[in-house]
Image (cartoon, rainbow, N blue to C red; front, side, top):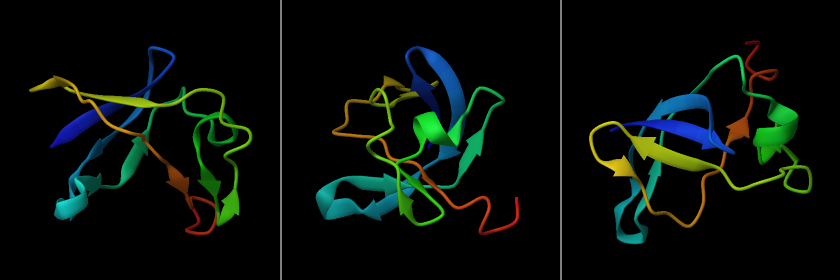
Length: 85
């Protein structure tokens, strides 16, 4: 399922989610950022280093097909430097 990822109402990227742990209702997928994405403000982890103290506000997701998705949390683990992107 494709979802758009938002921070304070601003779309910072999107992802195509698949079930990662169905019994726990966990989904995961690769994150594709927009130009509004800032790892320092939005990522929980940057190249393996904890960044949760800097994340200002919880992220939210919305599916064009299903609307807003009620969830306990949205986490971005950003490994773009490690992967050379």
